[in-house]
Amino acid sequence: MSVSPARNAAFEILMRVETTDAYASELLHSSRFEKLSTADHALLTELVMGVLRWRRVLDDKITAFSTQPLARLDREVLTALRLGTYQLLFLDRIPAHAAIHESVELVKQARKRSAAGMVNAVLRKVLNSHFSQNRAVVAHPTFDYSSTHPIWLVERWTETYGQESTQKICSYDQAAPATAIRIGFGASRQRNIAEAKGKQFAPGRLLAHAAIASGDVTRSAAFREHRLMIQDEASQLVALLVGEGKNILDCCAAPGGKTRIIAQQNPDATVVALDLHQHRAALMRRLVTEANVRIMAGDIRQTPFSKEFDRVLVDAPCSGTGTIARNPEIKWRLKLDDVARLQQYQVEILTSAMKHVAAGGRLVYSTCSLEPEENQQVVERVLAGDVRFRVLDGKDELRKLQQSGELTWSDLDSLLTGPYLRTLPGVHPCDGFFAAVLQKN
Ligand SMILES: C[S@@+](CC[C@H](N)C(=O)[O-])C[C@H]1O[C@@H](n2cnc3c(N)ncnc32)[C@H](O)[C@@H]1O
Figure 1 (tube, rainbow, N blue to C red):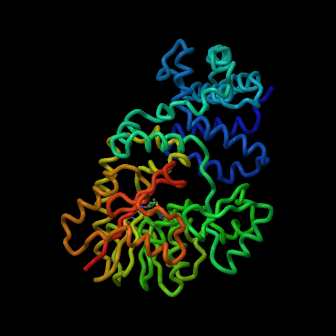
Figure 2 (cartoon, helix red, strand yellow):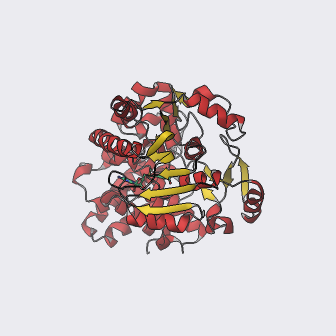
């Protein structure tokens, strides 16, 4: 019996995630897998995301039944074991024999024949173990979700946000988040909804011009023609904080989600969208259709501009710990040292971007990280060396968005930590974003 297309593809993607810095969500949407049937693609997504989300639970189970330590197993063997274990523990509808047999076939295909017997034996023991009789018990609501994340992350979030919020963050990270979209304004909003035929939309939970889609919007004409964007509501909110300007710089811009909102909000402005990587700038050229955007490739730390900007967005590269529900591999890849290294890079980027702000202009610094080192500590470090800038009170900025009808979330205080915007996954129905609004004298 050969391996089904969904399990073959899941094995391939999990191996790439394990051995390169590729992201599962990008691989899942790559052209290589677009020919899979809708049902196969749904199973593929379930398998890949499930294994990445529950990896710690799966590894504990495999460790209990393997005669060899996990660290000594070949990656192909461990990946096949994780895939099989995930199906046995979490997917009631999949027959156990198919889950076991196909994992055995996968190691054979990967030229690890000698491990086939061991994979078979471990998975049979998993099947016969306690959870096999109660296959859904692991995902039971009383499950301690904090044990689904690395201990060091759970400890630092508990210290920063408290136990209750940390539990909510961990729990939110374990399921596919809602698909939020930016649906456009006025007539284009109606057209986009009409063209996304058969799709159900619920109102946005934070924003008036956002919506929550059920079903696969990526197959709609409005999405294919880049009129309808998939973008988390917290990310949309950060772009809205940029406000109104005439000359706007988005200096870490790709793939351009926030650039598009800024350009739509400011149709008479020129928006310069810069990104370090040529290939990401090229991606923006395909995705960003607004006529008032100029796209450039370059490093903000070295790019000269002939003019100053009255609005600047620095959506800095970061650890991404606020987006683990979408990118679960982050929790396994990230190391404590990375956080300090990222802070240094963010300080350099922010310091460089501030040089391009006109007198009286504003800069929004944002990340999708939950780590204070990448957020307020970056802002504080940079402002300690530059008295021309001050932090504006985020509450005033959010209130303006509320008064304009854009922000529909009523509890503004819950969105703030001091003067900063701070959303937390699970506490709020969105990704975890941080934003600081800085004003230049
Ligand atoms: C968080 S992502 C930006 C997401 C984007 N703002 C959006 O909403 O779609 C950060 C981006 O910064 C870019 N980047 C990293 N270092 C940079 C640098 N020194 N100068 C300019 N862009 C940089 C990365 O290539 C990446 O595309």
